[in-house]
Length: 287
Image 1 (tube, one colour):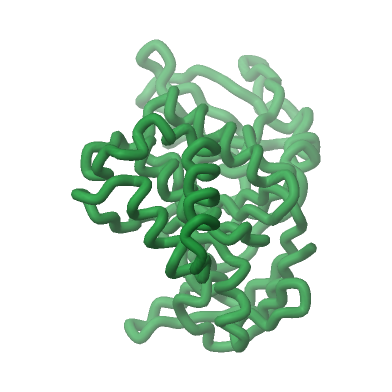
Image 2 (image 1 turned 30 degrees about the vertical axis):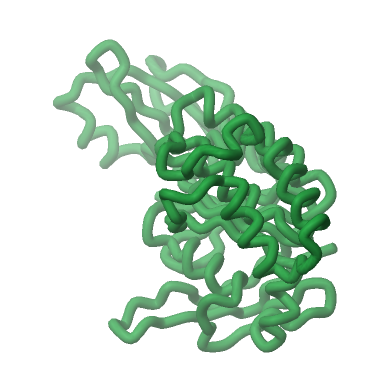
């Protein structure tokens, strides 16, 4: 099971080139797609989900031409977009039953079994009779995954699924995604590095429509061993450090900037070597 993207390009009518000859191979399991806002992630996800056309290129999923065999793709696809609408005055159980009917599950008994199974899987069974308009943000996201799982899809796309969730709901959502991604392809499109670090066995970073880096998170992190240096500095000197060194990130610590520099040798005696993480991979790639 593999999703193969070759030389995919997309330019919008306003002249923005969202994808630039992008090629990528996505294997079975959880796959993280990282990039800043405007990187082209959502354009790529919508194209894979058959919701928009590419200018050129090809996408193949197990012998299915994604760009031309749209109905075949939709039969095996589950999709949770960044923004999805629900009917707020309808219960979760009723709406899932409606979605199951639209997905082609015509037998009422079969739909009931499918809906109840999904409600249990997403920990929404006790709230099945509540109107979705009263759900918390995390509950709505879990409902979104429930509808995406109807029909036992082989490919699931989730776009920025944990934005706005509190830590408890985020952890619960992580557990759910991890379970789902064991035997199918789940593409997690996000700008939250920690989500990819926690969940994904493979990943890619895109920026300005181009593929910048791809591989296993652990290997990409190992490639930076001995190359990340950290130092607390005065606010007034941060621009000077950025001019002289390859500063990949900075954050405030106890009121002072804490900078990280990427280099093969120590920048000066006051820098300390630190173990790299996936955030360092991300910032060193998009900077």
